[in-house]
Length: 149
Picture 1 (cartoon, rainbow, N blue to C red):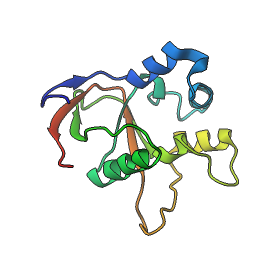
Picture 2 (cartoon, rainbow, N blue to C red):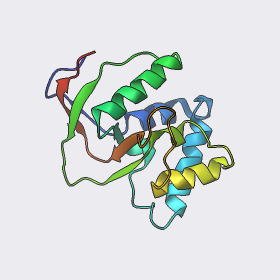
Picture 3 (cartoon, one colour):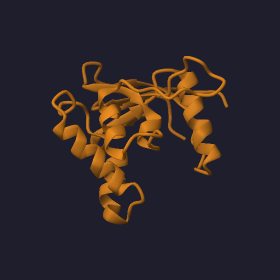
């Protein structure tokens, strides 16, 4: 658990992926997403997934993401409300599911393109209009409070 006021530096996910390298199970996906980001004119200046902090703009979205990770057997995490340390830091709002699965009828490359365009949203059964939003930012993030379980 982290204390209120703790600072989390951006790029932890990328540090892990780079450290493990090609043996990391998400290596190929992250390489594809980085290649697509650099090649798209409107995305080249967006934060790299490998150098960013990841947050959800709403508690509802964070809880949905957390539950989906639990259902996949991933280790549960403590949930926190956070804020950007640098409010002017670059950021990108997108659909977090695109980085985990490719929609039917799309190639992996097309999914990556839509991820960086930020214009695709999955329809979540039983939750009309709900968006699985994540924000990538170049800012460090500060723990504001621990959210109740």
